[in-house]
Length: 403
Image (cartoon, rainbow, N blue to C red; front, side):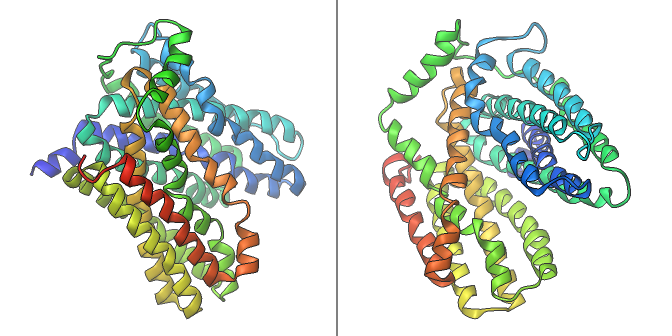
């Protein structure tokens, strides 16, 4: 009864809906926009360059101190900025739908950049709100529900958006997606402003310099940053090459789409939910140990699949376990990052950590094709499994099993 009350509380519902609002815009400037530009006959080189509009997601720590420092005269520091970001995001998504990729691709790029800027701004405030709204014991479950909401938003935007685009113009799809942001706005208006017992920065020096000074004055601060970089690096590297791997060992695109995308999506949702519930029981630190070990084992599962070859049941088993453990690991990873932020500088410190979290996705994934080509699939996935070991060893220092 106590567990159910925790899961269906106001705080957890807010975490889920805000996750949905953050996940929805992401693919509207990636896969959905790419499909629209391809349909309009835009050159592939221009479509590829469009990835640069996503830069705000990796640079959001630059303006996060501004959102920590200033409080708007309505709704409070977090909800005020959140309402501004969400309103601007709705308008920019609708504006992107009114552009013409075939006639003015650079206007499309500008509109898409506005979407990513306001989306990244929403991410900053939502991360700060979640950290301040949830107690330390609630962070695990709240983070898992946030991750689940995020994935539902991504699924609606990519899967739902592309399906709708077969039956209506892309401009109408973007207007519908803009309207789907309204539950997030309603949640912002109805949920209470979190307390700020640590106070707020009084000037820009306190907002920009003090968060860094406070963080790096802690014992083991550098090790925590290294851990953020390494904890999911093996999982990330393996995931970067899974689609070519599936095709190479003989799976059809239909089998990949059915098993990997749809079946795998639900396995991830269930995994992060289980992870959140387990974190309530055993705490964040021990969860990082358990889920990190399961992540490494699931990566080794791809090496086993490479040995087996084309087998849909084997694929389903590997995907189920990999997505289940990946969902758990992401929930614990997200909760850990929130737990090490100072409540006075939540937006700035969390934006810095989450930006750092994205580095392996770009840097470590870049050479994976070279490794797979020269090592073979079995050896490549074994290497990805072994690369997880340094991140796990760092847990001895930064996350002892007793919280």
